[in-house]
Length: 473
Image (tube, rainbow, N blue to C red; front, side, top):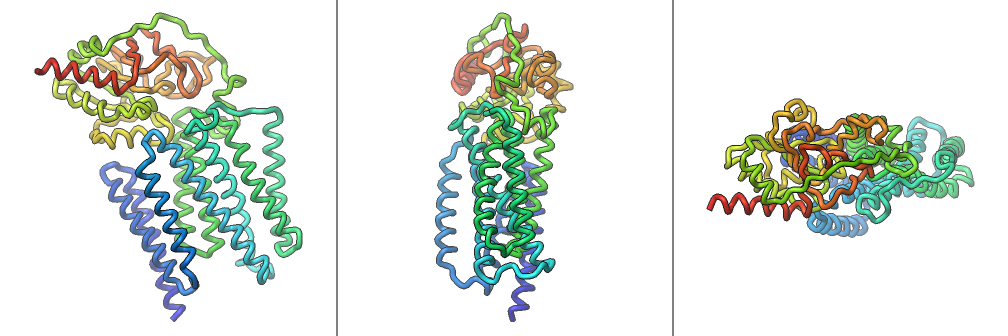
């Protein structure tokens, strides 16, 4: 009977794994993303149900309590957390996944060490020892690193890189101690010194997560989120080996692999290597070369902007984090509808690292029901941007900064940008002339064809919308 249940459980796990793969594939297109999310969710429900009905589970009290607490927290967070805080929300949840993996590794080690011990060096025990070690190491790094990322994204701690003398040496020492504990654990898993050493390992892992994240500037957070997401997947995969759970191994592998791929895409979008992101201290006052930007700013009122837009035949919106802060995505869509009604062709140019996490702008625009076929990637809009009558930059800064193209001394030189300054006219909606998250000044504000419209983006766009409505009455 137990053998039959085991076989049925593995079959159910394989079905769940297939739903994860299908769901992940469907998430690649907005038209199928919702369905893919539902399919993956159903697969996870199946995996959880099968696991709970396993005869090995003898007590459900703590499982039920934990499930209820987690469900309540997740539901409240999903409802209450605004879209502007979604990147920090993702980083925080990445961290909880890492913490869970670390605790799974610790729990299994504690039970095994204080019980029957690890026994002889069979293949099964070797895999278990290695997986337990990796679950605690990677899980600890993921947890503390994600909490630092969360703090930077939510501006609870400063977004600039935190650097100190001998930082790389300290990191190397902490990592070296962690590896040494792993070697000692493998050589003598039942030795008396292993128990305190494993506790020290978890402490060191969390310290390492903090040390490797604090030197990374806020502008590089999209890459860091992808990397930490990959770490959480690898930690979950290691936990799967610890628990001998097939679906956890598969799910962790998918998350780990997709996170690495997305990290590579983000690095390519910034024309920087992963090593440069992790170790350059980008955005720090020590690392960046300050370039003085001078010129005359040409300010424009929303009323005057209306007259330009009323005559425009092609308009491109370039959203950034400022749009998220102002919650302006809905008024952007409303203005776009009015422009289309007026005969203009409207499109949206999305930079891969616009916002604070990959896909941030896409999610915001989807929330406002912007048609997917109007969203263009950077490589698609740049070749035709000189034919555009008006580019409207809504809260973006670094991803449209011409310094990346023109100034070899700039800290962002070489980073691909959306060439909004090549358009016939460029409107920049910003509260001030302040630099972006990277701390680099933006000469776009002083270009001959640029007009600055100062103020809250939502209020500015609403004022332009009102001008269109008044003209139609």
